[in-house]
Image 1 (cartoon, rainbow, N blue to C red):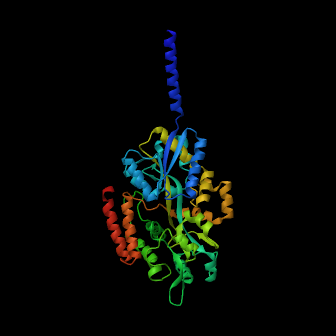
Image 2: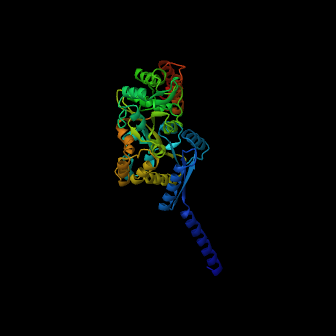
Image 3: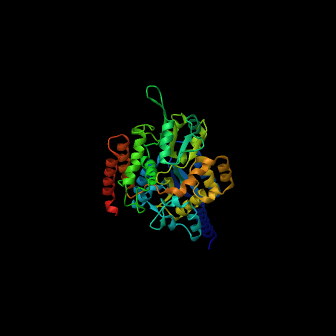
Length: 428
């Protein structure tokens, strides 16, 4: 071979090698939808996670995309799926599982996990996995999960002659306490409500707690049947409606989800039901001594679980899926899950997270952090069915009709059940 030809051949080899090396060094990009509407501490935490993960895994580029509310996030994710440009990974509501499966948008984690990953997949609290598995497969991995808890103002309890360290244990006690805690002026105007349970945003979720406490969850495990018109469910709604309309210890009409914590901070009410995800918010903003407890029992204790899971999208490369799984495992390690729970108020998703030194110290210093965990044995899967958004809307519409007085609880639940049965007929 002539010198010129040899030089040309070597140059070609060098170019090919350089291209191969450049290709090998190109990081795998994992686009990641995260449901938050505005910037703030959580976006900073997630950005910090991305930077830390990339430092530990230089071959992976994690790209968080802040996609708005949960409702906006699933709409954007499904639109992206139809446009063949889905994210690799998303955190969406655990209740979106059936919708994502029906839209052929996601794959089960089982398709990517290796045998060594099975112990990790079994490490999460069983009550969180009820909304993460179906048909023998794991479709979601719990991340920012919650239950509903009771918060109360200890100063108001003391002023009303109640033990500030003993929250109501039953529905009857909850009503009795609320009557003692409601204050009216000489004209009958309320200056302090006894209790507030929000009914905008997620009315079905708050109501589901009442239904579970009265002995019935709202749907079957296969997501094909609802029980909105069961007598126990109607009675649970009557209890909620009566707090406002009959006993007048709760604001009438629709109580806003977003302003309920602020009403608590401003001492407009003594007790509120809301997510444990508000725990850090309450800890940082309540300028009075407060308590946190499991929800009071009707026939039994109970709360639905709530919050978001990781989902793995279908139209992705094997390398992206492996990289996404690596991040999900990294984000749910016990120490990280513990710190996430401390930073946000969400429930750390594994028993191992509560055994870490940082969480043990946090719970010792701030016992309310353990309440949602302790309630998990009484928790049930959040309302989730096929065609979930419309089936849930049927219930939300019925609840709001009953709470505003345009329908009786019985009529509202019978109408909601009729609509749910129509929507679910093709899935049975």
